[in-house]
Length: 341
Image 1: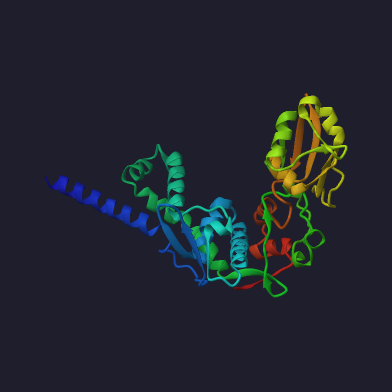
Image 2 (image 1 turned 120 degrees about the vertical axis):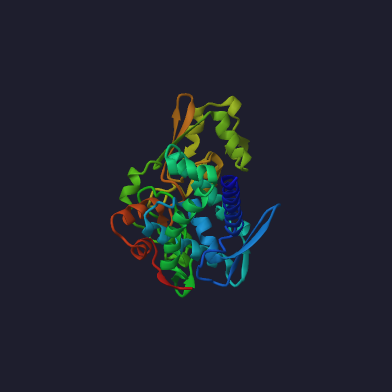
């Protein structure tokens, strides 16, 4: 009888701990972070949560990088995210997560994700089975992972990137094509803080090269769905049912690139297409591209993953792994000062 009572009490305590943690973990209120005084609102059909910008940073950071990434890389990206959010807010005191347009995970989602990873890695161990059965593993794993994020936020609290006295829009990318793009030359003087630098390790990144294949019909349809209609001889629309790939390839002009190899404009027949729009229409990873005929179809090869401006997360990772601290990493990519918000 006594044993049964103890078991019931233990289960009750476990259940209480789990429920308390899940509800308090929804918006990270238990984390003692620096407060900017500006709020991000997360809402959907089921709930609405308001949190300080500082509390929202880990939600975005973990959607972009793994918690086991080099800590100096995590610190650098935390400053980028904070700068991005505060730049986007301007003089406003509150902004919706939807308006920011940044991918993010809720604290509850992080808890679930990390616990699932833990269960897979420790399914056969005694402690693993205990934590899986009781659910206490969620708390244990979550707290271990969050300790790293707490250090990142503590070391970089309130820090932003400024240029000419203003918080910048800190553009960044997943992988460059081997070199980042100069902001002032391509975007104007307001973006003079974006440096063009060599990123040699990016060329060895797993996702550096991407290859996509299209039939002639599929290629034209994807362009049309994005409002791009190909004209030849100034009036006649290109008819893929009466043409072949070779004719389309002959109509293409990809000579308009910047000094870093990114496509500024694409011309097909008499239609001029912005490089970013062309890339988006075809679902490409980059505007650094090569288009060619391949087995009665079209092959598009791209280098890099992103628009090419600002910090390359891939090269920043390499820098962190080779001893650069977060400030050195940021200064490598941006002509900015790192100051308190």
